[in-house]
Structure formats: structure tokens, C-alpha cells
Picture (cartoon, rainbow, N blue to C red):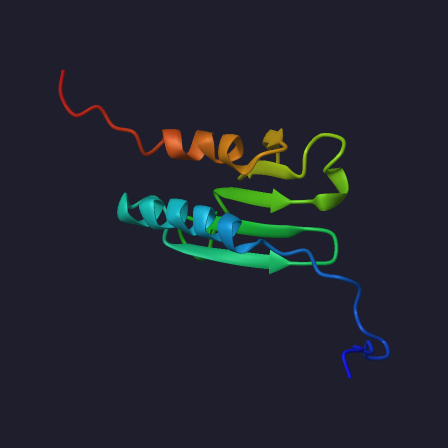
Length: 112
């Protein structure tokens, strides 16, 4: 009764964000929207990579793309921050340091 039989021809396993990762990313997205920097987002879930893209406008290329590649977990780190030009801006094993350059853009000097 407790045996699950895979569907014939099923796709390989899919990479996805877990709940804590998604909450952290969507929290950043909400703050970027409130600051007027982003207006749209896209999530891509594939067999090798899961990606979250933040857009200034829906018709442009993403300003930043946050990628999770579990295959690189033991090498460079499974998290990567990719810029608009496609260059890897930051790579690491933890999500928080990868999001730091984007969060830094939200800081503003109030008064001196």
C-alpha cells in the first residue's frame, strides 16, 4: 500500500527552492518592489538548475538572476548571483552572502 510506482517516461528529478530559501528570496523581491527597483519576476525550475530572476520591466533581461545548482554543492557552491550581462557576480555555499550585493542597493543614507 505504501509503494509509489514512478510514471513511465517520467522526467528526472527537478531542482527547486525549499520554503526557507523561497521566503528569503521573495522577501528581497518585495523590498525591491517597494523601493521601485523591480516590477516583475520569473522562476525557472529545471532538472539541473532552479533560477529566480528579478526584472526592472517585463520586457527587459533580468537585472539579477539567483541560481541554485546542487551539482556544484561540493565545488564552488550551489548558489550563484548572475548579472544582467550574464556574468557571475558572486558564487557561494550559502544564500545570504549571495543576496548581500542586492540588499546593499536598498540601503540609503537618511541624514548626516
